[in-house]
Image 1: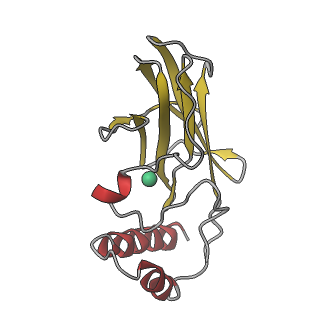
Image 2 (image 1 turned 45 degrees about the horizontal axis):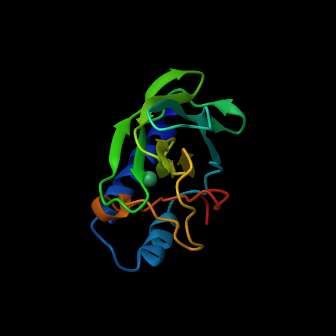
Image 3 (image 1 turned 60 degrees about the vertical axis):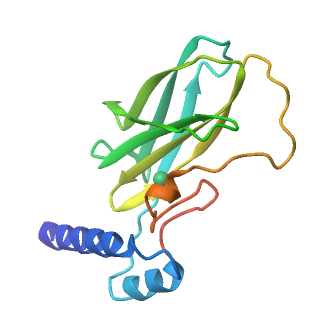
Length: 173
Ligand SMILES: [Cu+2]
């Protein structure tokens, strides 16, 4: 049974990789490829927290992603990276998270400026990708206009075939 699970994981990983270069109609090809593999009940929960959540310029905060699968801590995530950027800035930092124990992965980040920042935790685990996002306000910057929220830049360098936004519930189609 273990072997079969590994085989499916590796097979799925290969399918995902092979889809990376394909930027068009990923939804269709995604479904076609998945239809040959048995349905999986993978519901990965990723909760992104920023502590403290009230910050002044120069303060550092702990950015942590708590990764759970059906209530159980996932301690073997393949990759947890934190993308942090300042509102309006093209430059996005990408920092590898450390496993702090019990399925919690984190970094310390120093917010230098009074500004609106964003953080996205990109979590790849158990053949699923989740990327919850948080807006972080440092100091009292001028308020943002409605609809000015910015998206992760990750799609430009890396096509997330299995991208799960925070508002998606789970992986299966
Ligand atoms: Cu991602």
